[in-house]
Image (cartoon, rainbow, N blue to C red):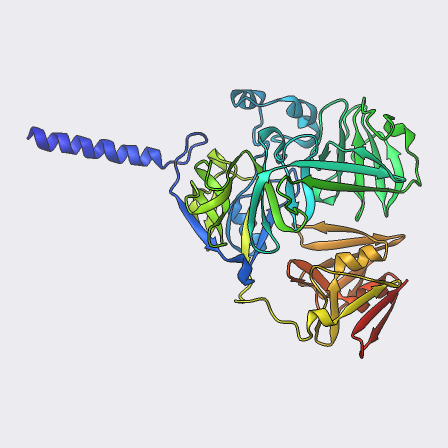
Length: 470
């Protein structure tokens, strides 16, 4: 009798422990380990970074459904808390909440660290580690289908008439009195100004206005640089007031990689505080990594199958979504997620014409491409960014809408992946072949897009050469 009571009590306690252990709590949560192995090199999968701008949040499942990802997990840390007490209990800094709570609403939802999407920097801190306040690792899936991770630093520059000045952050509001912050359309909303802030508005490569009142709209294909009240950190240690309308302006960024990795040649890159490198280090939460046989692993756990891995936001943010349901989570709404879209092709679709046979010459200069042009349905498709930039246009990529916007002089062109409609200054133009992703690059019909900017396009069949002259 005593033995039966003992085993009954033991069974009840064990069941209670298991139930408590697997309840998703904000801190100390325990989740079932699970992962998916993906061969990106096969051409059957496209890795994507998903977000709705830098102040909005959504569930991992909603992100996956919006982009057609069959698997997705939560990605970077973000400002998820609405009160100073919540932040202070976790050892955080309340300065951003005090500076921007009334301007952007609470919680702020600003992501933490570097975010790179399709080779473009969409968020980052330039004066410290890859993850700002949280650590120093940057992990990425390269266009070659491999996973890389290392400790890096980021440099961001604002260049006016050839003179380069340091920018602190991109698409992340800065509370410091000496800060300089750059915003483009990936920020996802109008830019608010604190008292004493001044903003330089750049459109079409030229300073169009300098203002001290918000909100500020970021122009399509342009950007905004905001200097706080004491920001005398521009070229020559001058203030923002030394700039003037009409000056030529652009911006640049570089990842300093000790290992020599090219973080501009990636599907996406995200920053975090913990990594496993050559089998050493790690944690137990959402992660993405690379295996010894060259596959990508995405999941929740300790990444035991990975040689290298990056561990992402944990606690109440953990969510692992696959094939229409949560295997872990759903967790809270998060700032961003990473996922994989299945293309349905075992290998990349072959181009009807050999890519290396097609040559493109713009204004007498022969262009080189990491994704060569192809011919489809009698139309030559070329990498959009390379052509537009060769024509002197400023190019902007919106990951959330999969839309490219290019601006040159008084002409603005926009085009969405999978769409046969090109918009020129608000007027729709129907393309014979839609814009499409090939080898991780956006390819478009050469004639249609070049002529939209007023350029002349020629095709020489014997030499298989496209000539574009503006």
